[in-house]
Amino acid sequence: MRLGFLGGTFDPVHEGHLALARACRDGAALDRVVFVVAGTPPHKLDRRLAPAKHRLAMVRLAAEPDPGFVVDDREIRREGIGYTIDTVGEIVREHPDDDCFWIIGADTLPELPTWREAARLIDTIGILSATRPGYDPEPAIAVLDAQFGTVRAKRISDGFLEMPPAAVSSTEIRARLAGGESVAGLGPDRVAAYIAANGLYS
Ligand code: ATP
Image (cartoon, rainbow, N blue to C red; front, side, top):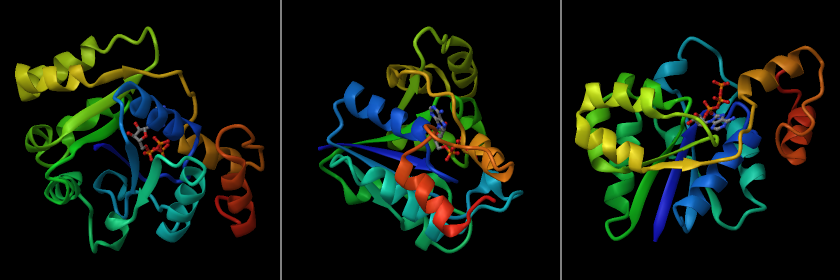
């Protein structure tokens, strides 16, 4: 099987996450996309996230209609700060006969050098990323080349796929909800209903 793992805080999940998952599934012929919901991510320690059980429930609602999308809660069950390299190590050990890929949004790719043991991460699992048509990935690749060497940078650029632009972020959704504005169309209706029913982000 070909498996893609899409990590995120999903606070909340939105159309951009789903578009990224679809682009990687279709562009890299994945049998399954696994949404890995972060517990306590190292790069977001400075802000309070919605409780993990709500973020997880929203991702489950978003993923459920698509039989190829599944949800993994291992990082939520883990104590302490969650590092992607630890999750990836577990995943490749659990799937010795499958082709596994870690999915990273193109906007997050330039942050890769700050991730713990990023070089080992690139050596351990394939990386898939997706960008909007016309986006020039060269500057980002040049940074990765300087940091990790040509072989690793090429592995990453080989994993670049195209996706339709989805100009939405969780930050924007939280801001709109805090301001009492509509978030219609930015994510699945069932997620918006869950947010309203649980009084999140208001
Ligand atoms: P926040 O605004 O709270 O920082 P976010 O919307 O960027 O959150 P995350 O959960 O941090 O969402 O992102 C998970 C993954 O999804 C990351 O790899 C990120 O690059 C990617 N991603 C997020 N939004 C989009 C989008 N609109 N298009 C493509 N990829 C995206």
